[in-house]
Image (cartoon, rainbow over all chains, first blue to last red; front, side, top):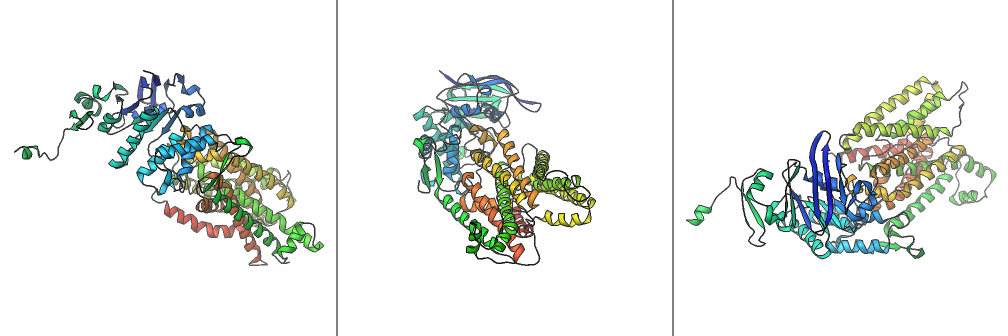
Length: 270
Length: 351
């Protein structure tokens, strides 16, 4: 298995507080990898540092074997795109104008709209099914459409690796599935490496080839969801008691949290 | 792609995407600006028809007409045009890089900083006969320095894990008030007649502009506006936020710093020769955004012409409506601009 991204002895911190400590991580090429972990465990921070949005305190991030800190930022942008958490578009900016910005690393002052640019932007609009919306202002769209517009922008960047920080947050269930299906298809059809942070463990199990569970500044476990997701893992990583069963539709692990709530099991049985 | 036209001459060695609507809007604004320019040149104590004005432009007309147009009216109208462009472009850039609809040279205290620098310049480099001891060429540079120092100071004070829109505006307004106080202090310390002169200048006026002013202001402003246009694609990504801008491969710190310097240079130039003509840098980019949207390739040129039209109109009204009294152009721009600013503040109160 080939490695797309690798971290070596990576230490991340905000000021004096260490968030990730001496982390060695390999992210497989052509697969979907999902970071999971409790609030504030550093999964977003790790993703941001891989995307060079945060400078590491120590260690390095390698993209296809090259240290990103030593590459020109435009070269990195041609190989890896990042969609940060809940980005905001300026008032009145149209979908096309937004998606076009994904071509930034390829533009020069004289070449701002080449045939290749047009082709990639059209492809991205098609893949995200927002061609009809291309002249609408982004701020006039629904949450799901808006998120697809941002994803189209990262697609227009035409990179092998796509990083997404909680791409489904603030979306309703229908739109969450829509976005994840879209990313799944991109991975299936074009073998793009997708790395994302997700909050929903069950959706992570369904879409991820590879899960990285983060706890106490390091990796608690990494592997296929069906191999690693278990009651002890959920207990240790999220601090929650649960039962793991099988998703009746997909066969992937399904986590059912313990706790309070209406239990109508007895009534049904009786 | 109905709204756009692909533009790829020279076998694709050059390629742009032209926004048809924005192009039309821009051409209309250029025509309007041109018309106001000619009309304004013809208005005043001695009235000239637009045709007579054009005749003078092309070397015709009587001696008297030529004198009035060339010596008295043209310099101030050219200064008004250029100052309007400079302030509007500076405001547009600031709103883009700070990602704040309330940002503008006056709100952020840049105009105030430049004013203090100009008043100090006049106070320190004047001799007993009230003549400058150094060339007036240095004045925009002093104003530029003043605006830059204030820009850095406001940015530094407003910084707290990023710059929030409301905080930077509040600090900007605070610093502006301080700058006004300093300007007044510098004026009081000088001779009385200079204070009254300076007072009109502070409000913002193109009264008394000369060809020597034009000769400095025009190249200064044009150079920085051209540089700004070369940076349009960088403003476009900065407007999407730091994370996105970095993600697509932008050098955000370098670009933001350069763009900030371009804005302070433009503000410096206009304050040096026209004082604090307020709110143009706030209003013009907003109006442009209503007309052509947020993409800076269209937004900057459209703002520039709106700014030029605003200041030329304000000056025209100020010198003709209440003749023989001269009302500074800044009075009119503030008259429309201040309520507009309050409306914007009201609109963003929940942000």
